[in-house]
Length: 403
Image (cartoon, rainbow, N blue to C red; front, side, top):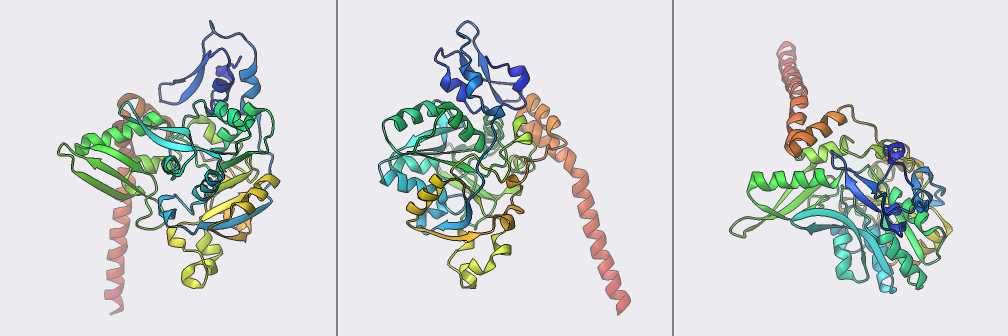
């Protein structure tokens, strides 16, 4: 039986223990900050030890990338994808082959948004799985569903964070030729409760209801923009698009101030990988390989988003060669790209104010974190303003002196 007091800071909430428990004795429960952890019903537990057996906290990634690529999906739907559209492209290939894809969707459940891992076996159901969701997803019973499909001989592509893939592999306890795993280069995961509080804050402030939220809006180019669509009491639809610096939630996420404990000691934030294929944004491509840009004679449109692809296993290499289709790709030196993506080298650093932000959230929700953010920032904002003002005055005085 899992002893949560010993593993809490390492627990990923991957759900492997829940999926394996035949007695249905394990459920996820939120702590005071909204992070989910397994809780065992001692009256139902038969002490079989399966939950400990499949728990991935002592697992480590084993695969060294065979080759790395920079790539983009040569398809108009790339605009709906966070980076170069690699998940969408490979998922589409699997579906056309009669397979099933698992990925993260943002579902509205009882009026609140919740990210969940779900399956798709057609292009319509695939659409909600596209794009980034900077919130931890609930794997639900998808490990169990995946195993059932694999045993029937159906090809499955399962995409998730590295710890979720590790949980899946531990749950399966064997290799399946018809399973392709894809992990993302993960920055860390805030919890659903914080995100829901953030959405509620926007809705209350603007007196609207948010109908959809997109963490990566590429209408203004590849980068950190987000958008959301709202309706008001008159059912008027309006879409707002902003840079990440307009969102406290986004800034706290990027500064690693609101991730779960295990993210700060993540064993998967390394060049060694757990999956067959790793995908993520190919940050730094414009500096390291500018000649690949379509504006400089290349065949990749950097403004639409570019992916980094790591091929980590022979099975992944074989699948990659088969699923090329509309993918434009070029081999790259992973060391030249990893320096722009620290999650390929080390975990996110623990933010010095994390405990204060979480305590503010516990007391007053997203509004509490927002108040603390500005309280801590006002001194630095004033300092930046004064330095800018002094700098401008000095420049004017120097010009007068020169004259």
